[in-house]
Image 1 (tube, rainbow, N blue to C red):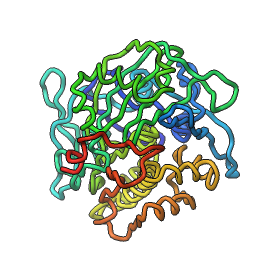
Image 2 (image 1 turned 45 degrees about the vertical axis):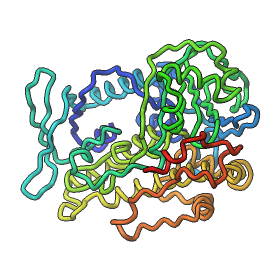
Image 3 (image 1 turned 30 degrees about the vertical axis):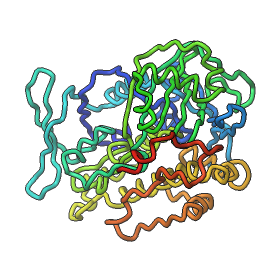
Length: 435
């Protein structure tokens, strides 16, 4: 849709049939803004998606908590209350796909199998295997990898190397549950459709995201060693954890009635170096994913799509055609934005009390901005400098060969965990450090 606004014809190659199940249901404030910019607010309201007004994080006792509201900034730079949405991705993604086709995109049902290159080594299209087994050649000026964690171009070594990120020893197990207990108040922090996060110990937490008036998405993220040590099926593990992880979560799910199969994603943190080049560009999760705790994944994909469209238009008109990487400036913009998110998340894990102070007292408005997703377009916040100073981290972007190396938070039992000091399960340390 962003390409269409620039007058660019696009072909979508999609191997799955929509609607289909997908995780990642919570939208940040700026994600909501992008949907409004695309003229989709009326559709979102008509589809009845729950309205999110913030995120609340509970400590392990289920009593202490902190809240970050959804706020946008107007033309004068003033913050104002706004809402975004929680979405059932099967419905939301199908709506987006149908709308893209309605606005002129061509849809090809099939699986991309090979990358085409021209005599200069630039990507020039794809070979697609159709459902009946036939092959179709699709020639293109630019190939955009929007394959998410499948990382289509990286797996075929068209990009630079793919690194496991800093949270790759975790596992996420998730489903949907009916008949939960929600907040029901008049203030933003008591909105019944807010995102709730329940903390147990370092790198061990659960999410609670309303999908409609009755069903919520729930998931548990934990060290993979902890899951393996339990020797349970993924369903038994999830059901037990939803009652054992946090007393406030147990209160909200008195009777666990699964409304969806139980799914699992292991080792999901990664980063692709050199994700743009002649004739190609990776978008969103197809080049980097840090940590799902604050629901940035969908926003990053949509924002990068918005940023990419005018850059691609310039390329089609001749800009940078002779450069080794015509999209180097765009690549750097994307990296700088996600680096901000990584630094914020790392500080949350490594120095939780300082993080809470930044949220509630010292840099409240700036933290609201970062949680919303205002991290691009020359965004500068004094809170970011504080993140990096407290992490003893220096970001440099002078050498393109260096800036994309992942450096984020590591499991470290000597550093303060959030709220209490039982973050590591006995017997898992050797597995964690074994690499």
